[in-house]
Length: 308
Image: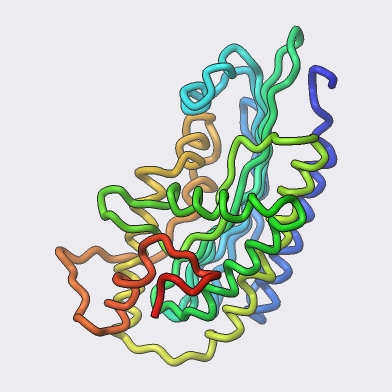
């Protein structure tokens, strides 16, 4: 393998994935379109930040970025000490969707590629990514569909991948200080370089390409569900958990800040409106209580364990 990897095919996939997801989301929210903000990173790289402020989607952001340089961020070398002293090249697509209707879940997806190199050694490389779902008023059939699609993304590459990366997602998107998961999970993988480069690239592509088939049917099913002001208030309260996770625990946020990425793009994931309420407790037996009791802990959704 050469000292540097040809990243052109990977970059081409990421830019087309951004385009196709934006087209799919615009089709769900007619009359509203993404606005693109192209940016350059002074130390190397840049990206395309796209945001949509629509009727169905209160805030949707779909980012493509590529950053490279000679100074490895501290968060990366702490995670992988062997990266010290190497130049790096990191790229990927990341999205977060905050719907207006409390009955449509918030969702996040990311697929990424990272390589570190120096001229006297073989390159270090890996793929990462996944997608996860954060409902406010969950429907079990939606959660099952989400996980069935996640499994379908993994199955061609081995039966062990879905359970492994589903469990990793449950562990990663966990708010330690709240003792709850951020939502109902999905897939999360990182440092993925098992097998050939082509097979790893194909798996990462499969995850990215299964996002719209996982999310679109849920949006279409719940978009006309009537909601109350009290449900909207609960949605805004639970959005606070999203903020807490992204600012306290998310490795991607930390890497972006430490690598000199564009702050507006990195914090694009935060919801437009959010509220905190002191010592909130759901009413026993309510739909809000159902979320707390049955959906904010790891569950084997495909076997029926978890929700009522």
